[in-house]
Image (tube, rainbow, N blue to C red):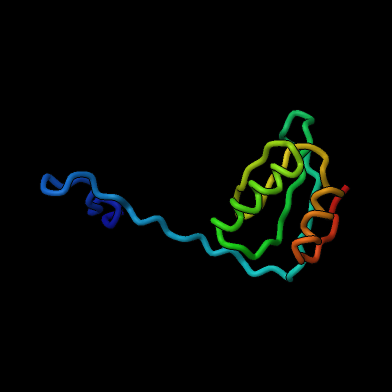
Length: 108
């Protein structure tokens, strides 16, 4: 608790102090990219969840942008996974295999 209270947030000499963001370390996968279908908590709207990519955050964002463009839909990157809106698992599998990834369809 004392460490939290001693954190410098503002200095009259240099202004607001920016905090260093800690890099989140994701566990290494087994080399297989898995594409899940998920509808829970989304009011019935399905998304394709791509997990198991051993890429940096910037590479994930670039890959997600390319996949969204090729699928013609929206999506996002959350917790090291790519979420693509809609039921696009077969198309995503094809696109990722073209990029050299080993892909499995997981879940229902």
